[in-house]
Length: 95
Length: 493
Image 1: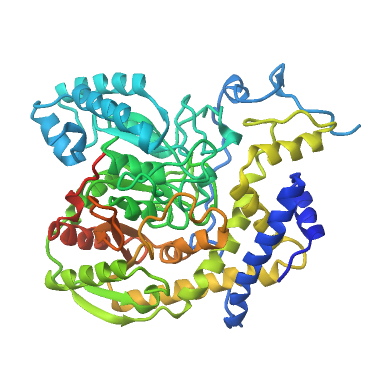
Image 2: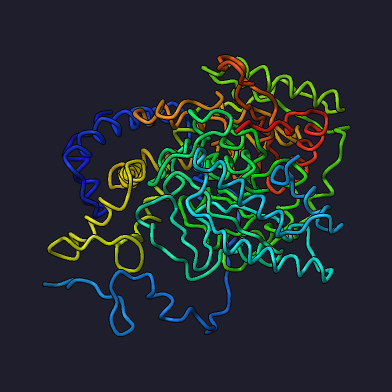
């Protein structure tokens, strides 16, 4: 199942990741090969089989919504590439 | 025997009898790292100062009579388990300078038990890989043959145990990442049941598959580490609210009444002859020890597990890796003209090849028009695989298979062909799909093409059990290990 160059670029945009021209060429070939391999799943009959999203069946886990201490702001911001007055700093979202 | 070759239980005995101090043991391990890690490259970070400080605290604790079985024992931690204030790189440029603001649950547990941490172990970037060649920093080398891979993604953890650069290590396993490197390096590697060990503070790869577990020199050590790290943690909603047994009580040297099944589908095409022979010999040994063996077990959907995994794991990874935006922490590329461009450049330059490939696969499998054919289909196949294991465990206590179809391959041998690399996980992946526990235990050496003077390459046998039946696995693994000598072999470095 061949994936086109345009599809590779589209998928990268969906994830908001840019790719070099060489990446696109390589991924087009490799992803096509891997997607081809995935076709093996079409041989197996899954009519009426429910999907599994988590292997060990657990009910929803609930807890009381009570305030408790969190991490100090400065500890969290210590890893931020840019911060200002106790906030993460980002480029303008709307220009 | 050198101090660094000791197991946890041997070292703990000497510490308890005051024949050895944690300080001496830790220094011996640090010297060993200095001596061999230039060649093995098992560590991303060596935490010498911290280790010596923790060793001194451990010696005080031992002197006061409050020692636990792991107190003062030097360990390595895979570099995707958060260690507060100590680099946790995940083998990635993206997190090269990341200093976690908190401890992972398992780190906390080990610290309470008297951890001496000697370093953070190398790994495939974001745990994606089977050879540790995807580390953004450098590949790790197999201590049995430095031209070969240690396996992955916990290749650093396995190699450091095999090379006696620590006494035990923690790893994580999403599709075989503890068991496959353990097999290739000739050590014990255990993936507990999904939910048995809290994932709080584990950098997420595929959240329905990831599990933390120990890599050790023998099965007794494995039980000792499990006793500390297993158990419920309310910070991981998927961790099981179940009591934890004392795993050392499963260390029983006979297998009377144990039903062993051998699923035929795991003798895959292309399996190395020596691997096949070692697995068959291991099963025969279990029979000698009193087990009833059924050689005719069948798990017909096994052949679909790899495709199922390589849809589900990248899909979950894609969702997890969307958090790397260059704003909150991690690598940030600010050369773009806009916020969006910075985001795109951060990911292009922060992630390596394999991570990008899996992000692309996952994004494709979840995208409009393909969701039903890929992701939903894979989730249904996951149900079938689970049901087959459930049925097999009605008749068998454990299933025994190979861990890896081949012994360690050469560095560079599979890097150009991602699909060939994925196929090295064919025997370990079904375990994560079903969420069951499984161990890799040394069971021989492949001598197919040893260079002169070498013994060959280690082979591991995999033992699986139903969810939360870790005791059955440890019993079989222990009885087998005690009846053989494989676990005593050490590589010459």
